[in-house]
Figure 1 (cartoon, helix red, strand yellow):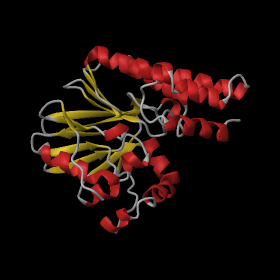
Figure 2 (cartoon, rainbow, N blue to C red; figure 1 turned 180 degrees about the vertical axis):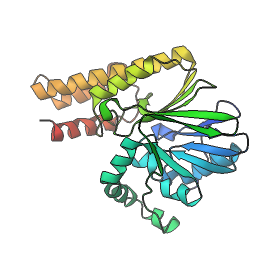
Figure 3 (cartoon, one colour; figure 1 turned 90 degrees about the vertical axis):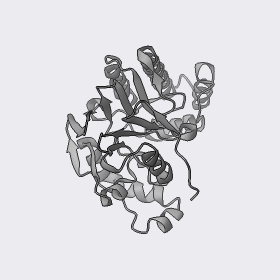
Figure 4 (cartoon, helix red, strand yellow; figure 1 turned 45 degrees about the vertical axis):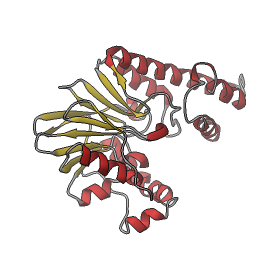
Length: 284
């Protein structure tokens, strides 16, 4: 596997984000005064980037690893960090999802890259060690991070959706509840509930927001614009899917609509077709 340097976004001396290339997953780093760190999400396929970012940000040790939700690109390095002494944390919903079908999904995703098993011979899915029902505060030297369960009715983007808030600096790590400039994955959740989760986030105000995928949004106005734009996307797409179900639109028409107009510049266009096909397989 080729070694890659991280695209490291620095907010201040304590807070960083690793911004994924071409809409790949973003990760967060919160560093305490003693060099201990909270890592927000980690993908075992991108350990070179994560290690590079931890070194460049001056982190001596990962004390906590937070899974914002259960998907492979956010949780697949759980065991790797558990072995090094980190406490792996997530919501009760995330724990239930990993317990129910995490092993199967982990095997499917990891099986696509045989080189992972060469590099990590004991690779396996790691479960959460600490869970929370609604919220908890993680304390590092000189800085606190509040984590909250944010999946409306237990299912928004996914079952485990959580957010991380650095209240001191008014920074929000939104996980996959927010995408910016890229088409989202909608196959694991409930779009109507997801919109409710976005509405909750719009009631808050932050100076910076790190989405699960896509660029950071800065300023209170940037925060509001990013959330409104994504809410409008979800509402529009959900409505179009309902029109497929009622026979008013064809799948091809919906796909064309979601790749044009206000959405013409969004990345990962292939995701639209995948989301529609999943809806067609599962709608009743």
